[in-house]
Image (cartoon, rainbow over all chains, first blue to last red; front, top):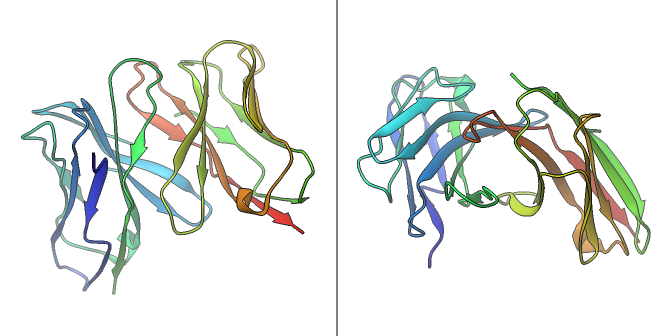
Length: 113
Length: 110
C-alpha cells in the first residue's frame, strides 16, 4: 500500500495563478480531508469529504474548491492564488469506523509570490 | 468552534520523563487524539482516548479527563528522536471535523 500520496511536493505560484494539489489514497477510506499548516497555528481544516460525491467546508474554505468523484482521489483547487495561501498543505484519510485515526500524506509546500 | 490549548514549547533531558498537557472545550466531545510531527514531515498517530483514564503504549501514555476537558501525553525514557511537535486533536460532534491544537514543540537535550 502506498497510503496517502500528494503531488507536487513543492510549488511556487504567482498571485492570481490557479492550480490543483493532488491527493490519492489506496486504503479504501471513506473520509478524506485537506488541512493547511501555518507556523504557530497548527493544522486547520479546509474541506473534507465523507464519501464519493460528498464534500463539505471546514474552518478555512475561502479560496479553495474540492471535488470527490472517486473514493481514491480528493484534489484541492486554488482558484486565484494569494500570498496568504502560502502554507504547507496536508491531505489525510481515515475510515468511518473504529478509532478514526487519520493517515496523512507527506504534504505540499506552496509559496505564492 | 472548539478551542484547544497546549504549551508552545517544552525542553527536557534525554532519559527523563515529560508531560505535555492539552485542554479543550468539553461540548461535543468525541475522542481526544495525540499526533507526533517531526520537522518537515507529516503528523503520525500516537494515541486515542475516548474514556477517562490512562492508556499506556510502550514509552508513551495518554490520559483523559472528560469532565475537566483535560488530557496529557506522558513520554518516558526520552530519546533524542522524540524531539518533535506533539499535536492534540478533538473531533466535532459528528466525528468529521477535526480541530487540532497549535502543537507543543518538544526539544530533547543530551
